[in-house]
Length: 277
Image 1 (cartoon, rainbow, N blue to C red):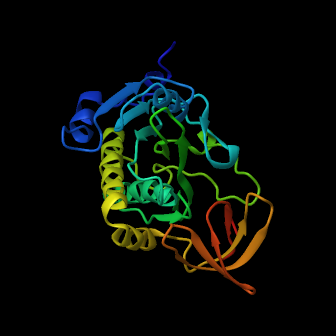
Image 2 (image 1 turned 120 degrees about the vertical axis):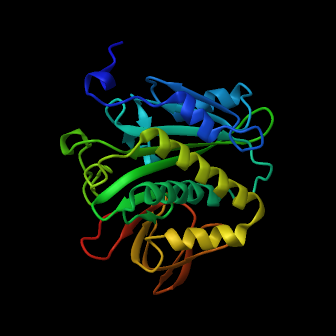
């Protein structure tokens, strides 16, 4: 296969440095692999989980050919233009998993802010937004295995895409953008990946032992709480009102004319301004 990333002038990840940044004997991440290209890092780790791969396994791809997002959406990027990383965890608890997509979204927001200084927010449950549009998406999946349920969380961050390398914007959605288009022209993808993994590990530790602290952290980064929203639930129901807080399970509380509704899954539309999703 031709090295399309090299042909474009984009640098590959420094694998040795990334392992130094992310993998520690006493840390959450124990094994990290970087591949040049794959269909979907999440799909690969789902299969690995079923085959008994250990908690703390990390897979990074320079290019995803069939990346997936929430609600069946696809996610693609040119080679070496993005961060595409998935992690496998085997949580000891089976309750409170609704927090984990928020944990991943906050980790990305913290990393992007730390390395770029850009203004970042997390749209419930896990889209990472800049004023220019959506810069990152996350897919968290529960995987049944012989030893109990496992978690696979995938993160995709647009780093150096140009306007014509971004996917078309679905009707009513936030347009896609990249860190480059938002003004961050010198982002080190190796460092960005390492910081995302560091913040994700910290969020996971908070989920295990400090849920009140985790809730405060998620509220601080939320661009949804305090915003009028329309919530489209998987069964077809629609609720409209003010998003006011996150409950103890990580659900979005929407106060409607009929009272508060706790949304655990669904598509959220921000109604302020042009009402993008």
